[in-house]
Length: 536
Image (cartoon, rainbow, N blue to C red; front, side):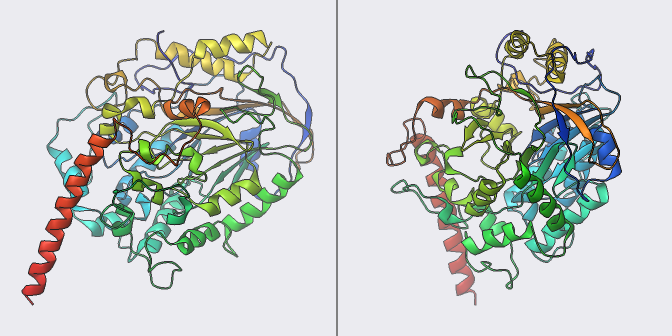
C-alpha cells in the first residue's frame, strides 16, 4: 500500500475484512483495582470484561447529502478477539442543525457501534438557518444520488423551513434540550461514562471572543452577525447570562456550568469522574509537545502500550470547541481570521487542566490535528464539508503508516489488540483506496487518504476476581500512535508568531474575494433596511 494511512477504517457493508485475534505474547500486565462508582452499571462491567475499541469523529454535517451518504455506508468496525468486545464512538458535535437529520445520523451510528457518546456543537444550537443553508439542502433533492455502498438511496427529509428543523424549540437553550432528549431516547450518552478502567467524558462548552489572545489582522472585518453564523442563527432567552452580547464570556461560563448543574445525572457522573481522576490517572507524563500518546511513549515517537497501575485510570475527554489557541493556525494562515473569535473557551481549558485527560478530542475548526500540550494529547478528526475535502484535503487529512506501527510493536515485543486492529485495517484498505471516486464521498478522489471514524484507543481486559468492582483486574491498553496532520506537523518545527499580522501570500487573494462578498452583502442589507424604513 502506498501513501500515509490512518489507524481507522473505511466501512463498506459489502466487504468485511478478515479479522485476527490479538496475540497475548509478551504483554505486560499489572493487577489493577477498579474505581467503585455508582455511575458504572452491570452492563458496562460486562462490556469491559473483554476488550474495548474507541473511535472518534466530528463535524459530520449530514445536512450535506454526500456526508449523509457516507454515513449510510458505514459498517461496524472490524474485530475478532475476546468474545465480549465493545466498539465505542465519540462524536464531537456538529452533526446538523436539523433535528430530523440528527435523529437519522445517530440512528445510523448506533447501528454500527455498541456505545455512542455525543457532545453538542454550535450547529445543534441553531434555532434557524441562513437562507443559503436551506437552499443547499433543498438543491440536494435534484442532485444525482450515490449510494456509497449503502442498501438504498439517500432519503432526505423534506425542507419545510425552520419549524421542522428546530422541533418547535423557542430558543437555542430549548433546542439544546431537545437534542439531549433525542439522545436519551436513542440511548446515546451525553455524560461521563466508565467502561472498566476507561473514563470517557463529553464536555459541554461554548465560545467567547476574549478567548482569542492574539493580535488581529489589520483591515479584517471583526466578529459580527454578518461574519459569524452563530450570532445570527442562535437565539438565547433573556434570562440566560450573556444572551444580550455576541461572543460574551458569560455565555461560555453558563455552558460550562451545565456540565455539573446541581441535581442532574450529568453532575453525578462528573462527581464520580473527579473522584477517580484525583485518585490517579489522566494525563501523559511525557513533556513532548509535538504529539505523544501516553506515559509509556518512547523517545522515538512510537505508539504506547501499557498496563494500568493500581491507582490509575485512562481518561479520554472530548468537546466541540477548542481549549487552547495553540490548536488553531495563526490568523495570518486563516482564510477567515475572525474565526479565532468564535472557536474556543477558557472555561473548557480550565476544566481540562483540572481533569488532565490522557487524550482530548476537539472539533469545530475543521483542521486535522494531533499534538501533546501540557501532558494531554489533543486530536481532531473532522469529516468537514464536501467542498473542503476537495479544496483543502491536505489540511483535514489524518494519517500514519500502519506498517510502521506494526513494525514498532514487533520490535518492542508487543502483540496487543492494537496490532490485530492495524492488520485488519491494512488488509481492509486493499482495493478500497479509490472508493470515494469523484462522488463527493470521502476517498482519494477528493484528496482524502485517511478514513473515519478514527481509532484512538484499544484495551484488553484480562479478568477479574469478585463482582463488586473491588477485585483485581488486568487492563492492557494501547493508544493510537502519533498521527500525521499538516498543521500540527507544521507547529512541531515552527513556533507560533502571532505578532506577524500580514496575511500569508496564498491566503490574501482568497480573503480579498471573501471581503468583497461580505461588503456586497452588507450593502444589500443596508439597502433593504433603508427601504423598509422608508416604507414605514
